[in-house]
Length: 292
Image (tube, rainbow, N blue to C red):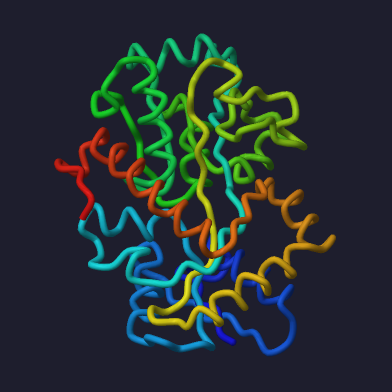
């Protein structure tokens, strides 16, 4: 069995693929096929229609690539096998700039007086999180001063250097800087409070901001798989995550367990497509939202 990661070694999809390969046991290999936010990996699945020895890690770009015209395929062209976890984001600041209090930070975003740094590209999940917060505050996200970086460490460095004022990054990416006291957490986008360095950090919902969003990861197979194969994958994934090793991975990486079986995953992806279409329209990356 081969699991394709659409990012280089060490990237988000790669971490998922290697964790799964270890949990699923011998005979499972990981291939890195980076490019287009995972698009190259999913293209390969389409070319291998009906293949039962191949799967790839899924993420929100499976949907957003199609919406913004980066790819001709999306989840409807593949076979959803399961959803695994969600990696939520955090809004962090540099202490001493007066933005450590959530209410002050939200006022600064609403007034457009704070530059927001994020990873990894316009239309990324962190950009869409900013769009949800801006919408709640009644301001167009397109009017906010934003600074876009190719990785979370670069976005965080922008804060440390004093150019950016607020960063929206995956929570785990900020942990080293928080531990050193270089940056301070203000809020997280998870449904409940995270643990570790974020144990005392309120969620957006606690602060009255209806933003519960993160980068989910799952598994998809080629198109044309028999139902028996899909069901077998669902059971195999359920077994792989039902042990202590998986629970430690969730805890160590601040991942939220959002496991869903194949049918539930398909329904989730349909609902996610509608939400992400609307958010991408708000950030000005699509002009028409439909069912196509």
